[in-house]
Length: 138
Image 1 (spheres, rainbow, N blue to C red):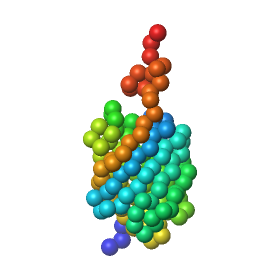
Image 2: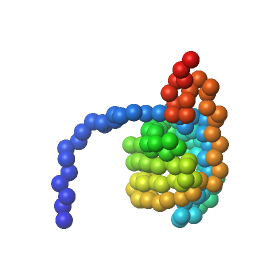
Image 3: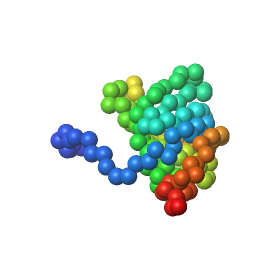
């Protein structure tokens, strides 16, 4: 069966972004057993493989985009066109949960899983901002 594909198109990236994850570090384990630690900076992230075939390997810094879905829940995405990586996470601090959908190299294997946040370190919010990230009124 042949699936018709649309013609090549330029990237289309729009919508609200947030940098609220900068300074955050999370450690998490998926139901498949894969275990990671991730650090967010302003516009970049890095992560460590804590077990599995790549144990001890640090990846990054990588550019990422994040969107706040609701209080304590974020959509995080990064893409590396070569070697063909696309990762999307939903990080839910309120429920200590993380979900992933990814296409991974070298043979473009699919990674679709859910897991739990084991440790979370978040920076203290600025006094100049409210809990929802808006500037506080004087």
